[in-house]
Length: 472
Ligand code: FAD
Ligand code: NAI
Image 1 (cartoon, rainbow, N blue to C red):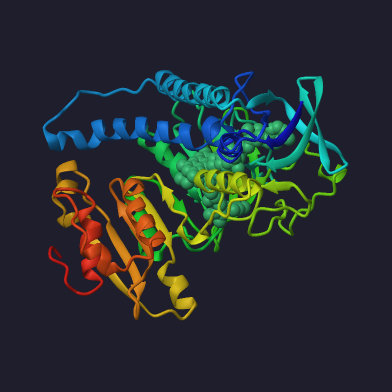
Image 2: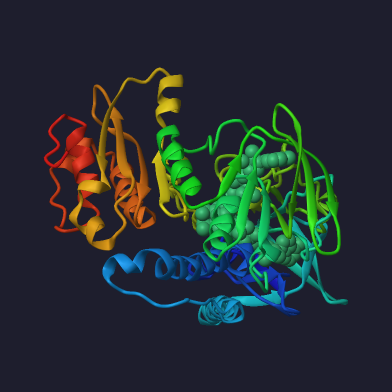
């Protein structure tokens, strides 16, 4: 129980850090305390109650919506299609189990010691860190020469109401509803609100989302946010921005949310309420005082650009530190920290972290928005191309949206790419690669894209940056 590297947290940050550390020859342990259905389950928030289950339900509900609304255009009809929620949830749970077992397999393959239970620091002695692991009351002590903290995040709660995951749900409850609520209220039109709202709306719920900010999805490019907003409204999702939430009454079979819409007091009755107002770093139970680990002013573990904390030999990565709360950001930090411990000099570019929201249409972006460029006084060129003119998109029956490329007016270097439309979650990687290689819009315009493919819209947008679009 004496290790070169101990990773606390087995989410996409922690388990990836452990694998990379073991590959580099360190004697490595990973401690994780996530419990699903009464059993320990590796993979953290992302695998158990986040990225993976939400995408499984998004796919199931999308299939149902297509069968109900769009397949008729292909000449395919089905009388009175039904969804079996129990089966849909079981499919989602099977995907989680398969992946969690996969992580355990990778741990064995890489000779990583898998330790289950809740970890807390007890002391620092002669430069090493003592960690106690509480496995449902059974305690064991671990010694670590180096520690990587990857304890992730938990949902932020509203002071007005307690999450019970019966009527008032966080992401865990929102992924496990055993029937389709007739009326569903969601507080927060952020990433979780939009994705979970889409799932239950496609399955038949009347969804209303109450959002405090006056501008819808202000983190995304304004043109992309507007396009998504238009389509969500068309799908019947009611989004009210600029609201102030008041009292929330949780009765046995319904929830009433009192709010002010900027003009008047309103109340909204629903069968279930999802609270999705952001997430907070998970430091609980770590006992950071025992070793003097410092937090930043927002309560995240304080780290520098190299993910070093204020303590020698203690690093922190993923949702518990600054930066976007995304699984791929956490994993990449895990790789980079393990390599830095091994004396390598890897590079991490925050500017090329892609964002995807898996609504219909999907949205995806990387780099700067038009607003950010304007605010920083950077002159830019813009090329926009629509999916409407793309043969593959028309064949798919999904031709809404566009690709927008922003490049430096003088050097033509690509500064940001913003997409809304079919499979942009996949298409965005071309933009990430281009930006990582410091490509210009001219570089993309000169690359041959397969025909017919959705990627041709990126090609057209690149051509449009120099006013030579062929199909627009
Ligand atoms: P986590 O995944 O939170 O893992 C931390 C682990 O550490 C947990 O298992 C926790 O139990 C454990 N732990 C904490 N403290 C201790 C302790 N003291 N002792 C032992 N174990 C401990 N991101 C994307 O990029 N794409 C998506 O599509 C996406 N979808 C999401 C959907 C939902 C509904 C949610 C909630 C999140 C989603 N995210 C998505 C965000 C993503 O889940 C997080 O960014 C990611 O999980 C962060 O990884 P992490 O390793 O930092 O932390
Ligand atoms: P979020 O930060 O994306 O959105 C929270 C929303 O709630 C914001 O729009 C905010 O203005 C609003 N809000 C905050 N307080 C409010 C209040 N009192 N009343 C009304 N509205 C209020 O957070 P969310 O959706 O909880 O997701 C957490 C994180 O999980 C995201 O930041 C994202 O990093 C990650 N995630 C990523 C996904 C993806 O990559 N596809 C999917 C789901 C989550």
